[in-house]
Length: 337
Image (cartoon, rainbow, N blue to C red; front, side, top):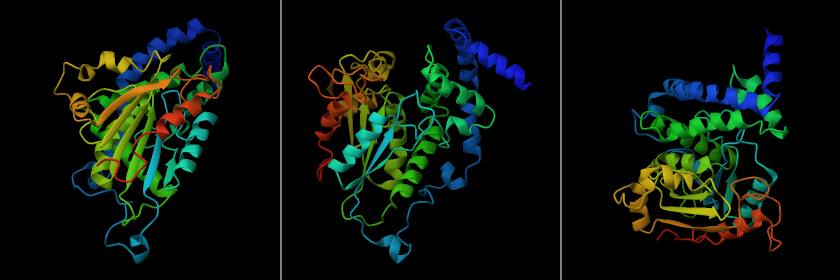
């Protein structure tokens, strides 16, 4: 059996035509089965997590907690980074993404960065943690550097999770799971204080499909944390529905050479300007949504938003992105007033 599996994997690795043919079949299968993992996760949760009780997750500190939990903290801001659909796990940041987060925190010492949330799993498990398909996903991960984009399967798989976040049937469960994972990782990175010295800010920075997942989680983060929620889309692809009513501010950056990010504005009617009652257009008309050019970025890669190549003016692409985000009016006190 193992020899048979190895032969199939070798055949898949043999050429682009084989990959494309099988990708079409897998695309259909994943489309049918992709909600299963979310439903299983949902059924395994407690009544409170399921939303039958309107309480915050148990990992959050209570006002009735210990004296230590009630102390004030100088920390007033969490930066949550949600990567694109090509990632294998939540801790697989590229060197450019790691550099970006380190520099952002250095510029804003009142903030802490959380970069280990996997936005394509409601339970925050990497693809290597999937019991049955883990060997296949590890093979796909190792094949990334091959002549054909070996992560085509990873991207297709993660795109279906992106679609679940949008789905009116399963999206509420999936997005609640992501919000729960975000709070868990926030608390692990730096315990969430009951009485911070400044009102708590949560800044969700999502690229590609991560922007949609960030928007989907915003509703629950707002409800549970009572914090100021800002979503920053960096070349993100998103609809105009989830998160736009709950987030205090939404900013969208797009590169002049990015041919992917504008897909969202084309395929989702809620992003069309004539759909005046959509949450997206309501946020835009209320001044809570703004978009701008980031620079000569491509969607990803060395010339992408977090790429380490140098643009025509000699500045690294990731530094251009960093400069733009540092100029946002969310870092000062009372930014949402």
